[in-house]
Length: 260
Length: 260
DNA sequence: CGATCGTTTGAGTTTGATCAAATGTGGTGG
DNA sequence: CCACCACATTTGATCAAACTCAAACGATCG
Image 1 (spheres, rainbow over the protein chains, first blue to last red):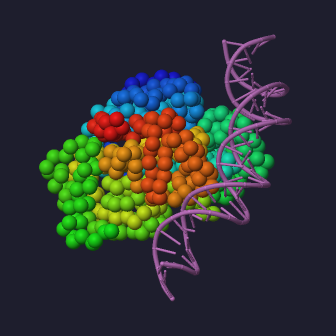
Image 2 (image 1 turned 180 degrees about the horizontal axis):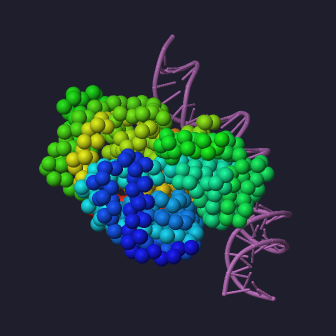
């Protein structure tokens, strides 16, 4: 799936993805775009269940997910694990690293993944020289933070059924705006055990909850694919309000058209 | 409690608190310190249960908690509420506001509170001109984010008993480094219902859980005060690891000395 | 063709929620 | 100073959601 591209290609890939990400916040000038393009990126592939960074690591670069499905998680001494967020292609995983000294959580691949890595020093320079880019980067972290808050509301207050519904709504939107949903269907290479770790439920209970969602005609699953059959029903069941995703008007418009 | 200070005093209060906060990350130069001091701040008082900002609001300024106890929270349509974090004096509550368009959560006073408000435009200018200050501000938001992640782990994986223990450990540390803990005792003007909203538990169950913690000799409560009787026991019960708070070495050192 | 991993099902248990009422506590006004 | 009110805490009893353990069933892969 990932024929190793030569270095030049790689560099432009990483920069391109990053520029697209930043321009969601505000269009960049040519100078700014060049500054981002100048970032040298190397890519690395990971297999499922492999860690990209581990809790406690002192990190040297910022990771950009180019392909695949990954997650951020924390574990307790006794092995209990909480998945804190899912990463979809195009996201910057850990802008934390160049400000905080150590990782206070881990990042792991869920499916085969390709990450682009940008050295921390390069980002540091960008911050010193390009306030608008800084703001755009900051914006990315704030959106991530908003998502974390919604997850806390989700796990703290919603029932298992609502929780699962909510997660699928979120994924439906986030994958939708990057064009990874086709007829309500998207790739979701996550086991029920992992889903349990994300929702704060046991794997067994996840299984039964999925059965309920299927029985109610809200979703269906086939292998690693998930289909949302009834968006409105799912959003109603989850009491889903997409505003926490801080999508732009064009994102929202495109999504709504897609649903017609 | 809060005799209204004249405007000059107010201004220096807000700036002083902010400078102290930022210098935890890195010492500022005189120029930088002046830039922060130039921020005009007005204060406003709130009574318990009053909202400072509400979900959906388009906000005009950044709020700094000067006195009292406040929290960040989100609600579901049907009234269920999740408290997302507690604010202790000295924290910047919502650096989000000048990057994100709308609040995706609310901020409410838990006890009588005094907030300092800095206009968004002023912070904008600071960001354009002072990269080091930008970095320090960003650092503040990242620490808040790290705390939110730990809460998610807390609510998602820990039992009621562990959860409560963990929250008290966090407060003990956070209040400790700002000098608000004396002999293990600190002010905690939060009802059991509010505690329930923070921990994802019913008020009744919070009550029983507190009884257990007391029975085990870990804490005691008297009115609005909470005393940690056995720090080590509490940290063990909670599987508490303070690294997510990203305290400085001096913070940690001071805290450990205090515990002797 | 085993072996491994993920999903599904069943039975029994635990944790925490809900409902209802009693008990404390602090503040206010007569 | 007391009566009263509004809230907060505490207790008891019952119930439901979700967990655990155990086993069967299905894929997928070398």
